[in-house]
Image (tube, rainbow, N blue to C red; front, side, top):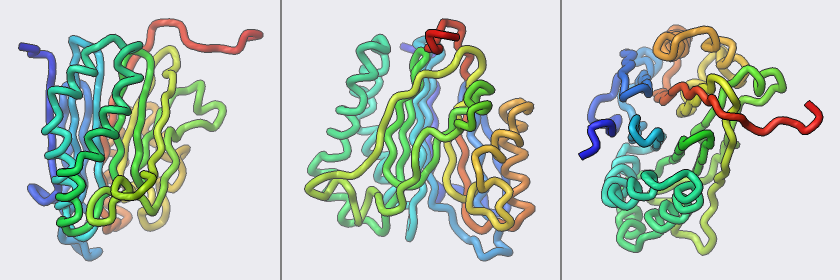
Length: 269
């Protein structure tokens, strides 16, 4: 039995965190949630997440969802991921050279399963869905919709590079389902982390679509948290959007990874 593996999952319909900031650790990963301000009209939370962190095998796997109409579609994705939990975790236990090429094919198989597609047609609403895996010095991401992943590192920030994926506004899983089309639409990719401390952060769109635009750019987010410990940095972000009367819920998953091995640099450096 692997006692170093920590797991956590949550759906906003279970606890909505309206008017409340919550920050909890899952191993070395921090999960921050704010359900929005009731005075701005918020009364429910349709976000969701899965966090798996294995200290022994040195990987993190996170799924972040932002649903609309109801949290049913996010709950369905959580159920589907857990249905294939053993298969996914077996892939993640492999060496990074073997696991990284396999994980995307596994996720595509899971999301295109006939039974899952049938269930999606019956739910109320749809969800954006962002999956991120860190293993060794690599970051893999798979994105449907408009959740955002960031990779914060001083070298990258010096070049104006912060965001991992591009947001897409007409992709979902649920009643309207990209995987129920003849050609599914999604984006995915692989990123090499930089030497030293890397901060990986996933967020739903309440953070970047807040009144007064305190975090409308990735640079603003980076500047707000770059000198802060992980939990405090997330708290700062959530407190600012709460003070700016954001209505939409925000869920943040973040963790730090220190890379000690060599990484790619220009040949003339």
